[in-house]
Structures are given as structure tokens and as C-alpha cells.
Image (cartoon, rainbow, N blue to C red):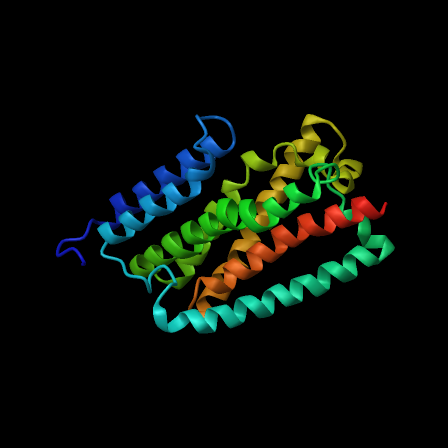
Amino acid sequence: MRLSRPAGPGVVLASVLAVLVLVNLAGNGLLPALGVVGAPLAIAVLTVIVWWAGGTRDDVGLARGTLWRGAIWAAALIGVVAVVYAIGAVLPFTRELFADRRTAHLPGGEVAVRVFVTVPLGTVLLEEYAFRGVLYGLIRRYRGTVKATVASSFLFGLWHVLPSLHLATQKPALTSVFGHTAAGAVVADLGVVLFTGAAGVLFCELRRRSSSLLAPIGLHWATNALGYAAAFALARLA
């Protein structure tokens, strides 16, 4: 059921941003954490906001007629990432890029939970639904595709500021470049923001070309989850 008088763009987008700020702060230890219910709860609230705005499943990239096409795109993208990661893990001059202190000492069961539960349910679905689904879809309705891509990708970059504060000391390949200094951490964090912002543009374009949210979901899961798997495998072979 759609509302006869949907909420205006300003209050809708402000509500979406408020939800994302609270989730980001909670997820990074600055507010009480919601645990495993955090992502599903945020998705539910964002869905209510889409309905409040008069939006549809098509606005968030989940129209029934596009799901099969999106699934094909997702499967193809996962395959491409798997091949690229396998080659990168084998080649000596790129192998170090996969080393990650967050994964090196984890048991196989916990890595499996991250790959098949934490990453898809706690990270990928929330981020894709929020940024390439809700934000991209609603801003495209209000202001067009270009502004939707720019705004969604810019905010996606900012979303990664807090999670990346200690990345330079967690990834050996980055530690050798940025060291353990505060300045190095800031530069590394800025690099992550720029990189994820650019990735956001790619994810938005995948959503546009496939007309489905499943395409960026597939690529996002593959780059994150298969990275954990590759790091774990290399740590065990070392």
C-alpha cells in the first residue's frame, strides 16, 4: 500500500542519514552495539522510510522482474573476483597484499562465519541496501542518476572513516608504507575513503546497468569475503 501523501525529499533523506549515522557509530563502538540484530533492524527502518517516501521495490533495485538478471550479473562478478584473487594470491609480488592480522590467527570456523554470515548479513546487505538501494534510488527519483551516484558514493566513502582508523597497522602491506604514526593513519584512512567512494561509483553503475541491487551485492560480497578467505589460506600455507 502506497501513501497518498508521501513525505517530502528533505525529511526523507534526513531520516535515512540519521539512521546511517546511528548505525555507523554503534558499529564502531561509539554507541551501544545492537549485535547481530543491528543490520536487519536498520534495513527494516530504511524500508519503512522508503514506504513513507512513496517508494517501491523498483526504487531500491529489487523489482521482481529484475532479480534473475541481477543474479546472473552477481554470479559472473563473483567468478571474476575469485579468479583475480586466486592469481593475486599465487603471484609472489601481490601475495603480501592479502596478508591481514585480523584473519591470520582465526580458526577456520570463525573465518567461515565471517565469510558466509558476518560479511553478507552484517556488512554487504546493509551497505548495499542503504547506499545503492535506498539512497541511490530515492535521490535518483528526486534529482536524477548523476546526483544519486555522486551523493551515494560520497556518503559511502565517509561511512568507512571510523572502520578504517587502524587499518594501517592491521594490514602489513600498508604498515610498511604508512608506518605506525598518527599522520600515516590519517593518510591511510583518507585513501580508504577515496577508494571506497570510487568503489561506490562502480557499485552504482552496476545497479544502473543491471537494474538490480543483486549485481553490486555480488561484487561487494566477493571482494570482502573472498579477501578473508584468501588471507586465511595464505596464513595457513605460510
